[in-house]
Amino acid sequence: MASTEVSESSPTRRLSPFRWAFPIVVVTLLASLLGVMYLDYIVDPEKNLHDFPIALVNQDVGDDLNTGGATKHVNFGDQVAAGLQQAVPGDKIDLRVLGINEAQLQMQSAKVYGTIIIPSDFSKRLGILGVGSVVPGEITRPTITLQTNPRTGAFTTAIVQKFGAEALTQVNAQVGKQLTEQVKTTLAPAPGGPPAPELSAATLVALTTPLDIVVQQFHPLPGGSGEGLTAFFYSLLLLLVGMVGAMIIHQLLDSALGFLPTEWGPWYVHYPRTPISRVRTLLLKWSAVVVMSVTVSAALLGIGEALGMPIDRPFLLFLYGAFVITAVGVTCTSVLAAVGTAGLIVNLIVFIILGLPSSGGTVPIEATPKYFGWLSSFEPMHQVFLGTRSILYFDGSAEAGLSRGCWMAALGLLIGLVFGLVITRFYDRKGLERKPAVAAAA
Image (cartoon, rainbow, N blue to C red):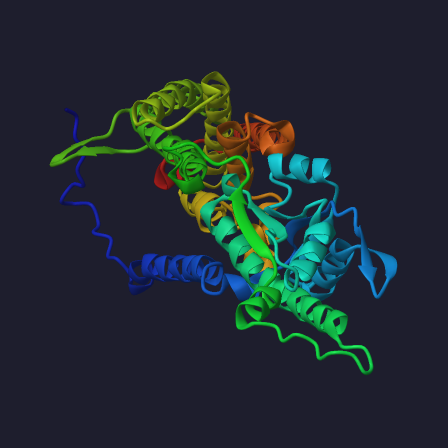
């Protein structure tokens, strides 16, 4: 192996305190940014909750009740729906009044995270319950169904369940209060008539909480889905492979071309510099990134299937994975070609420090500080997550995020290609060759 050493006669360059302290300052600043981003999005999701989408479906057709000898048409479902709309904090929950078909479509495309369903016989059953409290017979409590959307993530499901427990408990108490007053009014004795029968304790309990709140999953996840986290971690793998792979390719090819020294344990080698332009060097790295993206995407797909991860659209996941890795890798190598070693820091900030907490993969964007929503509109990790989640959990639905994931990856790839070619061509035309500063000055 060829080896280069500093001769004894060459002047010894001493490390200044500033140069020694500079990497410590850089790491401290990066760690501080990392701490702010990662802790701010997880410390208090309930406080940060905003625009959290939940559908409200009222199918109640009402019922004709006989009160005091007169027939009156009532619709308790409308009253419950109106009460929910007033009680729900508008700055936290985006309560969407929808029909059942539209609500299911939005659940299937992850546009809403949960649905409250008031059934068509709600008023009828509530009226029967009121009559049944004083007339012997078999009765069934009216139900309100809270559907969760487990394919949007475990944390999202937990928020929906907590919201349902709080809001529907209040609704149950309010309906119970109204029903109890109605029954007592019905039983009120006529002037001079016999005294009204007293309601038993069991009857009062039944009237106080008349509703049966049913929680059910909409399209439950199959086993091996990690409670909805496999999409996030698969997306993270694609992003890390694209970024880290690009950095490894950049480093090793620069070493092979003689632009950087190579160390293997105690051995050191610095090959002669290859006469190659910056543009051709970048094209060489891009070709390696493309080949790497295909092999790694196939490897990740095989590993996922071997581990029992349910993948209904394997070929689509393979293509999307290769596309994402290519887009991220090309962009990262372009940044490194443009700004050199500092590109490592730029890539780390863009793809990891800002990307992971704004991905929406663990905590939904609607439960993070609002600036994370702004970041998620362009940060790569969020786009990759939407596309991967769509393929794994929503049958590759374009509306569930695949179309956004694809065109944002295409936009990122285009930006990386144009940026890299423009910068490296500019450097070449200006004669800014990649050679040591001393040699360039000579």
